[in-house]
Amino acid sequence: MLDNKWEHGKVRLELPALPAALISLPGIKPVAAVLDDTVGREIVLLITEPEDKTREFEGIKITEFRLSAGLAKTSYGPVCFMLFCFPNPGTGARVVYENTINPKNQRQLHLYKVLSNQTYWHVIIATDTGDVVNFFEFPNDYGLRETLERVESVCEKLEVSDFDAAKAEYERTYTIDQLLAQ
View 1 (cartoon, rainbow, N blue to C red):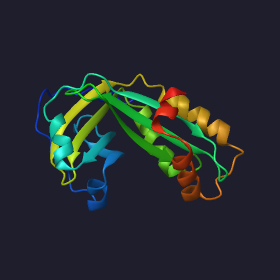
View 2 (cartoon, rainbow, N blue to C red):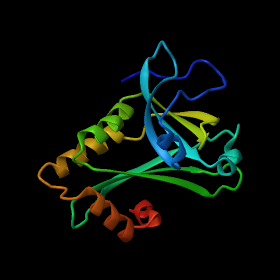
View 3 (cartoon, helix red, strand yellow):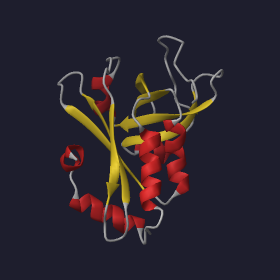
């Protein structure tokens, strides 16, 4: 496991130059970054939203971060979903970010495999222009490595004929609340 515990206290982070589409599209994305030269490259979870939506998280301590992950069956093949959740510190309402990945795409799975092999998960919340408004870390006790191993095992003999169609069917069929209830 990569020991990437943040040991530098409170700092002001600035995002490196990233593709505009990565920053401007709202949501959560796994991104390779070097936060600490002594640790080296790690995967961070980058959440981007319009400025008015991110400012409520500025400087607020987020004390809980959860992951629910699984597979959804579609007529075009399986879709792996990951739901990242934390309570809104101001209202207590659940904030959920969803990622869907093709369980047959090794490049997509690789980022999550690297993330699963880190002692801590670092989450950065930034505006859609790249201004960092919050940074927090949580011990990696999410079981993602085991989940990904199960996903690969289950999907070993399955085919994904058209992932875009599979994802569209998944989005029409399942709600976030249904997936979180499983």
